[in-house]
Image (cartoon, rainbow, N blue to C red; front, side, top):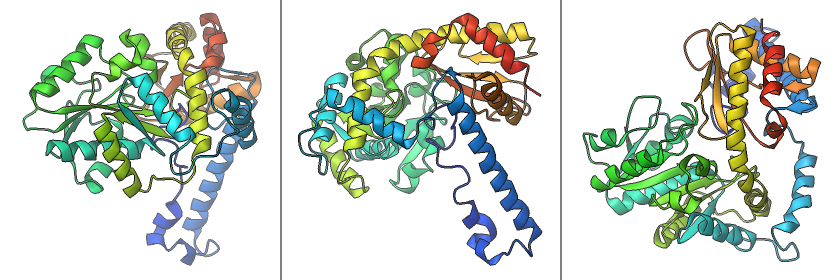
Length: 421
């Protein structure tokens, strides 16, 4: 999820399905000419669509962007990018994939090698990959209880699928907005079959434990006779924080899920990596869940391109995120903002949060105006996700941001704050 979409993840098209929800799904029975309330609702939705088009046009048209948005490239640009780079990562004169062979199988092999696992299976979505992994472990351990953080992806973004679809039950490792501790895992009052750790934990600010804390967490789970699963959607950029290669990080867990569109810039898709027996069972469940897709070469090729081009750059993005974060802090101080928070102060990955004491709509509008008037896209969409009167956005540092110095960030903050009303 980029900074422009928070919940659900990824962007599900906010507003979709609301017509069915009105009047118990009988919106077509209400005539706006005779129903002022419906007329007002339709006008409001049209106004929001118009605002969204304006926002997107402003962001696309900005000459200088701190971060790229997933919605920025047009379909034509996506196709051109794939055509330009695909031949460098795979033989395009071979046959297209069918039900997971060919380029998909090559992607699975590459991921298993990078993570140091026996095998890996491609999934059309991370939600499916994660649910299948936890379901498989529940069957193998004989315990349907999953210990995880209440702000982990399955609890926030998957519609209670672990319980509704797989019949699993969850217990929360901590209620705090941080990674759990080994002591908290050891003190959980009931047995659990799987400990799931999201690395990094996105909702509280893309937070990671230290390497020592992570190894202690894993050991605490083992002492409880539980297996460990990493929600590693963004595991790719954790190497700088941990100071360890991917294979060593993944090697702590019994299974790992990774995303191809988060961090790597792929079109879609994910992989579940782990022991050969587990991955073989996961492929069976993938078919049962409807994930045995006939042809997937666009997603697989884009993932291979991401592994080739973006993965080596992630450490530089992480390092520069700290430069950007410092520039933001200095800019807010110089602009006289009464209160702000850049969280964490030293970002653990190339993503972090910014909190400001203004309404979300006012901050989003200020960002749009800055992009339209100055050609500078510093922030995108803001959200009210905390105390009243406080808004948050997520900053993602990628290739575009490497050209920004701390002074550039400070100057952009001055222009942004001056537009907040």
